[in-house]
Image (cartoon, rainbow, N blue to C red; front, side, top):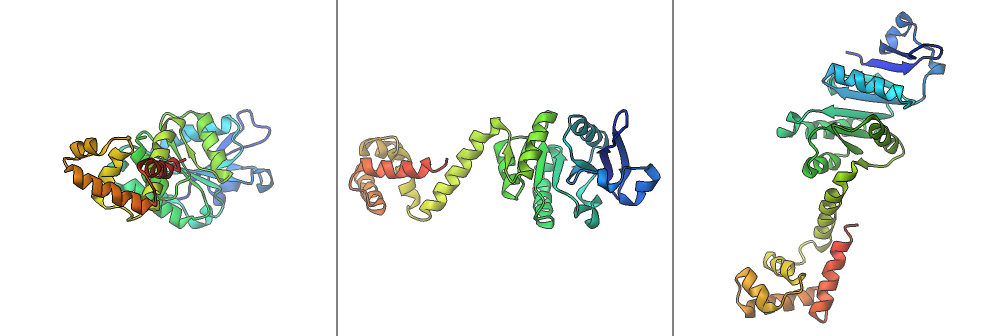
Length: 251
């Protein structure tokens, strides 16, 4: 099933028409190709009324893109996708419960690798956001995002950037930074040394570390010595500095 297309038409009072894809252009007396914007936004939303309102809202606020809408990814035909500049996928919370949306986004990005994909969802936990971004999405919008925020996300995706709502950035940066730290240190430390490092970074003495981890003081001393050796640090202060520097690379 072809998508529904929306675009501004010069000299029309409300300047918005809708139509099925190119095959029905003549029937609806749509403006010629020369009058259309060069870029196209595809909106995928299973809620017919919601996707219609979003399309009209974006047009009314001057987004300046031609728009096509679909009820699902399966409704997209290959010849239509060739004209897409950006894809906006709007989903409900239930899709996250069984990871189906994560798989869908992964498939969408793989199917159209050169088209940025943006996700809008009510559920905005940082784990959900991160899982979608890891699949290659170029933006994540909260379900209550206004038209101006949607336009900002679309513009950023078209410019090659990644958009995440401001309230989610700190959590995302912390998680991504921690993962970069883990990747950087690789298998440098044993699990028990990691436990010691966690308390060592707080500036605690060996006895305090031993108490916190329920270890013998001599055992902690050995772990600290091994940590210093692996970090090529001459003392505890230098070791803490180097460890903190790894975390500081979170950005």
